[in-house]
Image 1 (cartoon, rainbow, N blue to C red):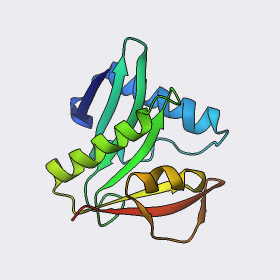
Image 2: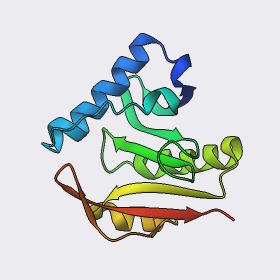
Image 3: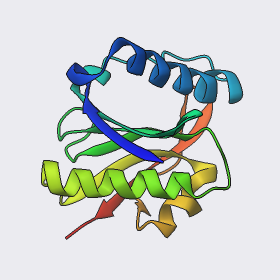
Image 4: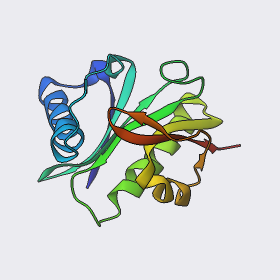
Length: 146
């Protein structure tokens, strides 16, 4: 399994295509949630991919402070293969990157409510009331690094 981290400007056309396809497959098709997947934030993001000979296994994007929240943020977190620990691995790598490269002291995410326990195991805590986003209940969660 290879970890690749690139800023948007470093992605090849093929890499960007594979990322967008994985995101649409999971968030739009699998979750049956038509929404504007391309939200204007990708150009300001670092894109983190775990891949192997079968393609993208896990993905997330890292946003610097001020793009989505006052703190750095992780988003569009997905795995294409469940039950292999890839979600925890990609989130842990995202936390490490945000701390080391962006100087993050806190990291914020918007999580689907059903995944709250998963993120709590990684150190995040709920910091908002549930809210609806594109027909799916979400919460904001924060990780205090320091």
